[in-house]
Structure formats: structure tokens, C-alpha cells
Image 1: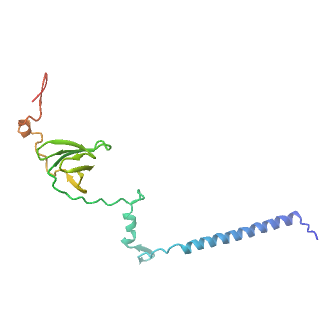
Image 2: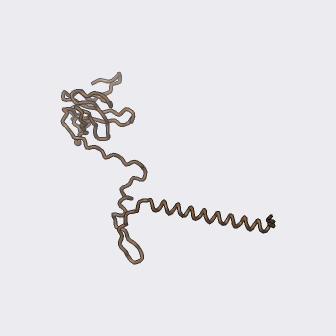
Image 3: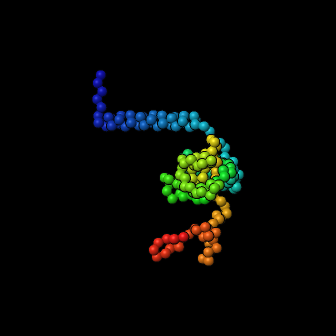
Length: 183
């Protein structure tokens, strides 16, 4: 027995086959989506109050938006609190002009001033770990210690034009002569 189909019949059969495949493909995609939604964890209920037709959420609902950092994927570590200990040295200045090699100016008990960079050993104090905007961090006996810039104005600043500065009496700023510098 042989079937003879005309062109019209072949087009109709092809159309029915394509429609059947599309129907079963749509059902399969629907089942996959339902399965993935069922296996996902349920969302926590949202606290809300009904105000007419609008739903007003409480402030707590928006707390995650306020606290997250949209620019950094990983949250920043909380800064560790570093205790201040009397190291018998004074931090006179900090330079952060070069990020590769910041330095600190430190004065010891005898009044000698020295320049230290990260990793340098500070006599009787420890190792300089980091230089920050208003303080330095020193590693002393395995413990991090902060040494901050003094809050008050440092003594021995530039005096008035009449020469009332104590540093001027010690030979501080020099005056220029036509032949060179002198004290």
C-alpha cells in the first residue's frame, strides 16, 4: 500500500508536526521553570502596613539598601582599634605625598629628630608598620601600637617678625647675606 500525498497535504502535515514540537517544547520549558522556582529558598516575609491601595514598608525593610556598598563586592574589614601606649617618643610630622614610600618624623627623649619609613626600626619603640593621615602604627613586642600627631600646636613654630621665637635664640632660621647663609 502506497500513500500518495499532494503538495497541500505535505504542507499541512509539516505544519502540524512543527506545532506539536512547539507545544511540547513550551510545556518542557514551563516544567523546568516551575522546578527551579520550587527548589529555590523562600523569600522572607516583608513587613508592611496597608495604607489604602498602597503598601507602605517599614524602615527596616530598606535597611539592606542603606547599609550595602554598591561599589565594592566584598565588604571592607572593620578597622582594628589600636591602643595608644607611651613610647617616650613624639610624632612630629607625617608625609603621605608619595604613597610608595610614606615617612614619619619622630623625636626621641633626647630631642633628636629622625626620619623613618615603613619597615624601619625605631630605637626603644619597635618597627614602623604603617603611616596614616593622623597617626602611625608601630609593632612593639608583637602588639600594634598607635602614635598620633599631637592635637595642640607644636612648640617652637615660626615666631613673629620681632624675633620672639625660642628657636631663633637657638640659632633656628637663618638670615640671608649677599655672600651666603649665616646664623
